[in-house]
Length: 134
Image (cartoon, rainbow, N blue to C red):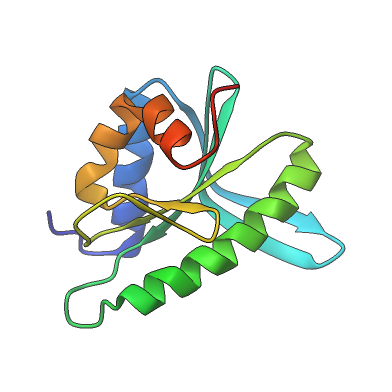
């Protein structure tokens, strides 16, 4: 799939989440004592809160190390979000390219091409990655 901009990519992720019954907030801004930061898509369904960081890397400059570094930053962002919301937040990074769903530093990495499968089987993935069913 080809997206002409990162905004288009984020919007596609949002639409997929909504098709799966999630209510979404787009480019959710949070502020705390450490300053301001943003979550690309905040999604909620049946009390489950997903915080999505979209990464539209192309093959020309994609690196696994870059995804892992972004996951580490997103984990910290989601810890801040949990404190603000007073609820558990499941952090996920959705890169445009990659081949499998995996886990790094408390963050689920869900390649865009696997997002539908992830959402269809979300509770199994959450169990697999240690989030358990609430």
